[in-house]
Length: 338
Ligand SMILES: [Zn+2]
Image 1: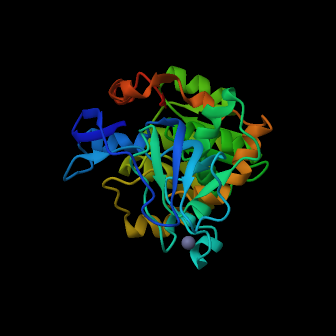
Image 2: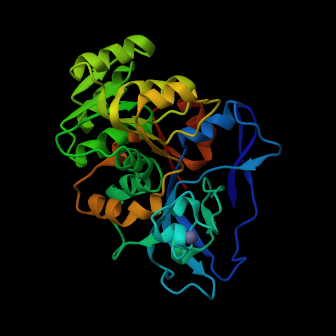
């Protein structure tokens, strides 16, 4: 088969790769229906996150089970499944507490930008649908695998509640789906911070009530203007830079909640600033597995259309174009069809 490899900054190659096989009795092999490029793939693509050797890419996936190892009990060949970017046994204490993305047996998925994928810990990682889903729902089901699951965690970890105000920092695909998640959790006012016309439009479609284009001190001042001078009840940080993290913390009222789901790059917190901000902080790699059954249900019942974030659909062999379009911000998110 052919799969996606990153060799160095802006050097994506679609090339011959060995077909994955069952290596542990708890593995499954999937034939992917769709995969995509993640905002976090852009960190190594841009050379900001260091890599030492050519690396297989991709960690968002859904598809049909081809084969399972002999200890796999619940997942069966022929089922349609969605899994998280982090594998989990779903039985350890940390999994039971709802933090499957830090499972004691966790592995981070890679190599999903390919037609076939090996998934370790299949029973604890994958969620199967009862029937094969209709084609038109595949993009939204794929979104639950990471980008929606992460946006949902951002809203949940920031304690978004009916009637409250949430500010979303970041207008990438995760930020946009954090807006959708906050809306579904009943936030009354959702302030999206975005300077980009098409993204503002999608944020509004997903439920944003206000758009703030300013950043830094001016951005914080605008949020305070909109919240009786106090700051928002919840801030959802969906980028991972120093600027975005401080934007989130300083836009939140004392006693409010800040979630952070963007992989941090060079973020450092100042103790005294943190002390007097008096906010709850909760974030990390999203425990997508916790939310998958609910999110898949919302998509199958057509209560949620997160697949709208994919504004570029390409055949998998044009994956390099998909990265380029996202890097140049011509596309919000690229879906790839094997
Ligand atoms: Zn576990």
